[in-house]
Image (tube, rainbow, N blue to C red; front, top):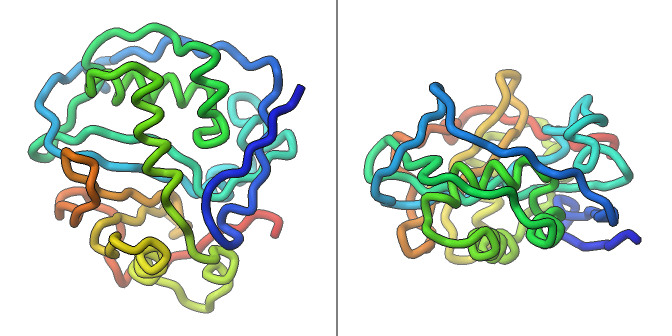
Length: 229
């Protein structure tokens, strides 16, 4: 049996189809490493990270990416995750060991974050530092994601010249209460839109992003891959 779900949003950015199969792969444990060590520090703020799926899926159709990039599914902006930040440039991560996610949690969130292993990773690395269950962690991130609206990405992708600042302003116009300086736009080395990071305070209210968070400058040229459309 296939379960169909429509993702939130407006215009062509979210004209998507997501069908969750009855059988899903089992995630494997996501553990800290020497390069990504356990780090328990106070939470100072949060980042909500969104991935532009057409760019992510360029050339990907098999393996762990088959659900997101194949099988007839189509996504616009997907939910990468809700990341606790520290009170400076360092952030907490892998705060405590976690079990494998229950299948019910995976199934409920797969049309927002379309990778079983990414869901496991996000809770292990980030959710473990928030002191909440997997169900609560994903409920909080999906509540934020579900309220977002997006501009017409197809129209933006066809502009002869587009900057990161113009994309941020277009997203801000679609979301009253969010300003362009409350997000960071990231791109590939070739200048293609990769992700949008939205900055939040400890109470999960949108706020201006700190300068150290990075991202493109507002006048940086930006291209948007729209896939086969």
